[in-house]
Length: 73
Image (cartoon, rainbow, N blue to C red; front, side, top):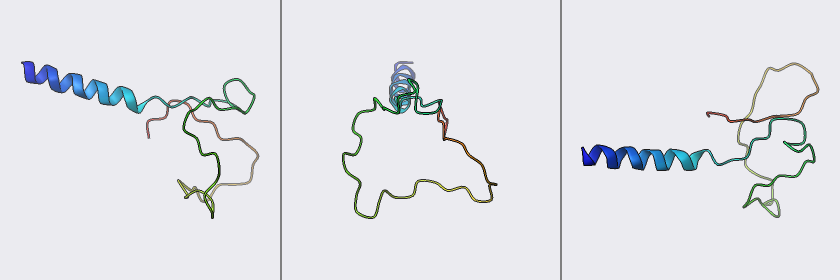
């Protein structure tokens, strides 16, 4: 019983640290001022730019801004 409680507590602790990113649900962020309150962001881009994180092909033309809110990637 103690082991199950220990494992459950450990899993709860680890899963709670995964979801600490800030929501960015609308154009220019939650305050609409284009300022992120995240910590540890790059102060300068690496030479050649950042690595490609993801790509989507086959989309039509359009005009929009990316929005991210509580994703379960």
